[in-house]
Amino acid sequence: MDASFKAAREVGRPFNSVLIANRGEIAVRIERACKELGLRPILVASEADKAGAATPSEGGSLSIGPSAPARSYLNQAAILLAARVTGAEAIHPGYGFLSENADFAEAVERAGLVFVGPPASSIRTMGDKIAAKRAMMAAGVPCVPGPGEPLPEDVDAVPAIAEAIGYPVIVKAAGGGGGRGMRVVRDSADITDAVAITREEARRAFGRPELYLEKFLEHPRHVEFQILCDNHGNAVWVGHRDCSVQRRHQKVVEEAPAPGIAPELAQRIGERCAEACRQIGYRGVGTFEFLYERGEFYFIEMNTRLQVEHPVTEATAGVDLVHEQLRAAQGEVLDTTRFCGEARGHAFECRINAEDPVTFIAAPGRISYVRFPSGPGIRVDTHVSAGYQVSPYYDSLIAKLIVHAPTRDEAIRRMQVALSEARIEGISTNLPLHERIFADPDFVRGCVDIHHLEKRLREEAGVQA
Image (cartoon, rainbow, N blue to C red; front, side):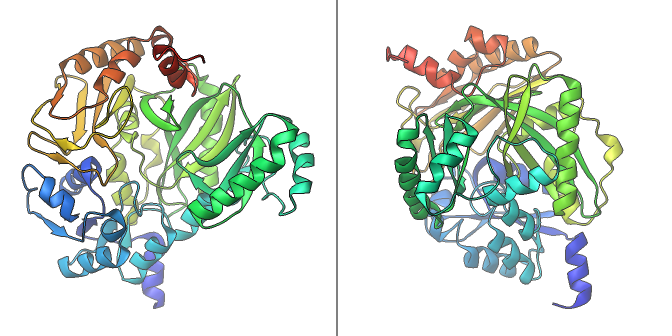
């Protein structure tokens, strides 16, 4: 790689076309942002998505392989070939699939293209939970109590580490994510077995057996901070979100700003996150995820990509995060004066999935009728319409319903009305679950913890909590 290209890569460089290496609502979202910035979007699709679309997208999409993700959206060679034959100058990975794959980011750059995301080095550092924790501790970001080092191979040495932290503790895989590769231990008698089982799970699921140990917080909320960075050393936080309404570690409802957080505390944590990004040479958008309990924040991980819940931050911060990603990748200097971290009103997002609202089993099939709500303060991000075939091969997310209003109470009422107006027929969806959540008195009051939804579901099913 010649010196001039290397320098251009380090600060970004202009491009006119973007291949969107993803599918569904996020592909539509990125396509729209590209058009707004005068860039040529290039869409790709698997055989399942081309066959399931009710109407072809404008300009069509290029087939990149069979339905199975490993042979299409995760097929790096197919995506790079698609970029070459279409003349794409940049690749946007969206979220999921290859968005946090450092090897793919490097392959994109080696091919002479721009990766719309952070440098591969940042992805590697933050994708390793142990390395990420060390980096955050060095930047002064508060972390969950526990050593920032992997557990020793000798399981007999682990009980002393757990005793020093204090039970209950949680065993985590260094390469884990999405709620996998973790186990809570409440008693010293169970620690060695838990480590052995989790280590084997980590080896099989993530290809690496490294584990670490942290204090297990009993009733935390899940709060995350949105960061924007350029390639010139500028970084700024643009608000925080609460993502505590979860089921099996998967987010269901998100809101911004997170209720009940003192502004001065949010400012301090947000600025430390921005400083951490400067220290690791981060670029683009990133999200710092924290557990929040009894007025204290504890870092758990960083997502080096666009988040599914990014629209609630866009609504309350007055920023287009995809625009900012594309501008950072082109080497533009971030105007930090546009952001103050102060929220403008309140926003909620409901993830609408094709699944049974009681059993949560995925419900693929053909959508026969769709009616989404509209009006002031209502946004729907989706790729589906009547006639669309929901595939069994991919995540069940089919739409995101977002509302924005001057206050949290007004936003709740707006979401309640919007949910009552939404109709999707032909398949099962979790719309009834969302209606129950927004009628839940504890949720309406705010500040529910990450266990609240599952506790409610057990109560509804008549199961002893």
